[in-house]
Image 1 (cartoon, rainbow, N blue to C red):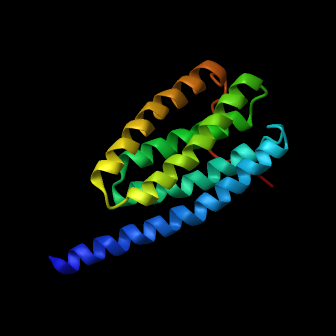
Image 2: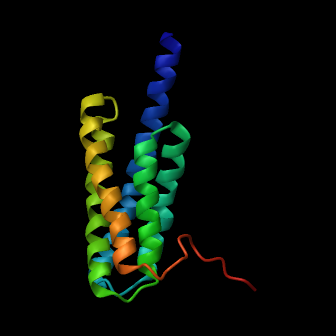
Length: 151
């Protein structure tokens, strides 16, 4: 049993390292979004591609709430990248910035069930917000993954 606990801790610590590395990439993307005054829509797609990596690992490790949350942001990011709705773009950017805070809280509290419980609640609220944003501002957009360019 001790070996299993050590392995679990090792896996969680590896997950935290992955999140921290991706968090740096996401922060850089957000900074570029802000610098472009939310006009460079490719940055929203890049955010979606990056958060998709967190989604994949979270789903694999059984962090279902985090997986659902990051998937909702991925979908929102991709839809937003195809839109010119300024209010929807601004609200999406705000959610993407909040995500950075949640990822930080998850990394700090990964071994603390009570801390994770708080973050899970906040993420569940944001999942509903992301779904509402998609319905309200991006309802006519169907593509929710990166586009593969055909030769």
